[in-house]
Amino acid sequence: MAYRDPENRQIVKAAMAAPYLERDEERQLAVEWRDQRSQAALDRLTRSHMRLVISMASKFRAFGLPLADLIQEGHVGLLEAAARFEPDREVRFSTYASWWIRAAIQDYVLRNWSIVRGGTSSAQKALFFNLRRLRARILKTGATVADDEVHRQIGLAIGVSTADVSRMASRLSAPDTSLNSPVSDADESSAERQDFLVCTRPLPDELVERSVDETRRLEWLRSAMDVLSSRELQVLRERRLSEDGETLESLGVRLGISKERVRQIESRAMEKLKSALVKAHPEIAPSP
Image (tube, rainbow, N blue to C red; front, side, top):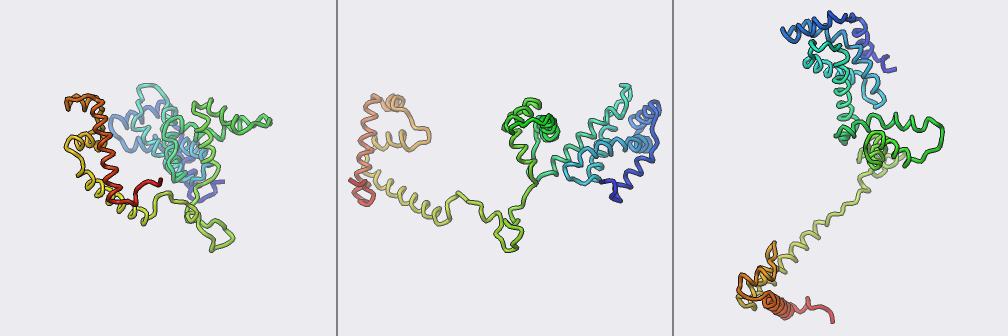
């Protein structure tokens, strides 16, 4: 039991020693805290509800986090509830505080259960905290149900896709694993998991080679463009060398010629460029 830990036992003992509050006394303390910011009133109000914090924190022990930390986070939620509580609404403080305590504990679990942050939306949070319970309920009948069907039913119950349920189930099935952990626990000299990760990016020498080739081709192209006339050069720049290549029609209107004439000029310019490049660098000529 988690309560056997000395720290947890001390927390529970202190909470059990706090007296219960009657409705009128609870309201009076809430009013004193709200109107006078009485620290003594706040201490009595929160101390009397630590049983509630411990009870709710205990429900999240299955996530493997220290109970003392869960209680501490629940206490933060309790203080937040006290800061926002309106005693004039005639609602018991415990009823109002329950939501804030649970929200604080859930947020702590989501932030610390895994290195990878999950449950960023309300639906994802509901899936994270209810998946195991819903799965157990579905399988409780004893009938054999395929995982896909279980995930589909859970998705319908929570309002998320089956794919989201499958991903969350996969995450909950095992804890985080370090990339530096050995592949085999039996052999201390075993390779680490990161040794088997494949990088798809080009190697440094490939990047250098690519950069040199691109620079060389650009110089070849600039030299070859000397064979073009001014109009051919203009058409080629507007059609092929600009980010937003201009259409044949719009370029023809601007130059005062037909779009067919623009196409002819572009085609002739491309042929002249190709011939000039092959003449200067025969090694790039296509194979016959």
